[in-house]
Image 1 (cartoon, protein in one colour):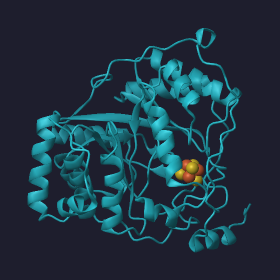
Image 2: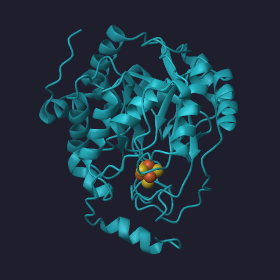
Image 3: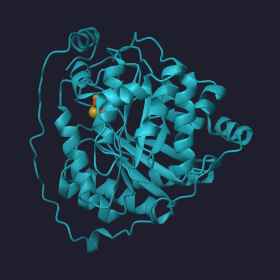
Image 4: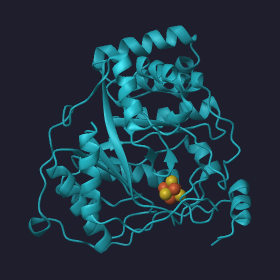
Length: 363
Ligand code: SF4
């Protein structure tokens, strides 16, 4: 199938606004042409370093400047990560995604430890993904050499709406990190969040940014905002299931070969709602009772849902073969100790400043 890369916002909005049944039918047909509709990839998301993040993402309870109830922790040990990965594998996950609440990766002991975690999980014959913030080309190469399968770096929203949610880094920084990952053989996972107060135009704008990348991301997570008390977006109204299905279906149509991932917000969706999302082209989920810090359905419940729908978890390395993993002592890449200057646009977002003022722990 030829992939279209010159999508415009108008074309994507036209798809998003189609009569619901037409949209569902078209998305489901494209889904069947490109994927087995009864197979869903299951990932386990592991927060390897929680809280204390210097960024001001308006949706995130891990930002140090907002007062939320999450318990922070320092970087987990390689052994702790291995134990969790084994548990994830036993419960049917083919991928472990390790998330650290960092603005960007800094060369040194902690990054070396993450590289060791990547090697360890790769040896368990699981796909390894990391979401560690902004990374340089050298860091992407070192992750690739350790055996990383995917790197997640979400665009979150359209370029215009991004400025309403985050002031501590720019959209171009996100694209630059994705570009750095693309210089390696690591696959790209990048998506966004709906329900942050953005318009349908912004939703389409985010999909333009993703669908015009060449190649398109191999994986696109679609999150529904989980409003967390203490964050600037704590009072956002819940996303309707109709919007979620429309977003999934539109993503499927404009990125036919991509794995579309149902991410945060699944606890608010009924099984029927999730079944509609699978029909519309979602073919990946996060499993485990926590998604970094927000709630997620229990694995047992998910497996019951799979049984009811006749779905099967995807085996690892179906879409791309297992990456080789090079030991640290054999590495071809030096630790450069770079200090890249990622941008700090520092524009003002009133509600973020308000939330910071309310916080007992403002920076
Ligand atoms: S989303 Fe990531 S970068 Fe933003 S505050 Fe949370 S942990 Fe930090």
